[in-house]
Image (cartoon, rainbow, N blue to C red):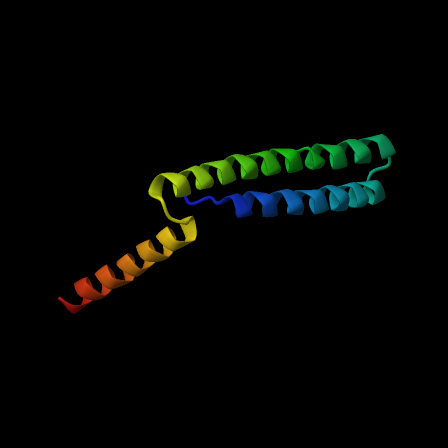
Length: 93
């Protein structure tokens, strides 16, 4: 699907910041401090999910590297070059 482990790690880090920001903003807007706390905790629960998905994707990426016998980055670069070359060939026809 094109989703990489690094993307999930980034989403986890962003969700930690979003949790703090939502708690801070809710604390200012809401009259009830408990509701602001719950809102911050709700958003904060996303971070472990994103990190777990990142770990699972990294395991899958490593497995693909082992199966193919070459690093994932090298394989991706080769695929990109193949697409560029095939695009040039069809454009020239």
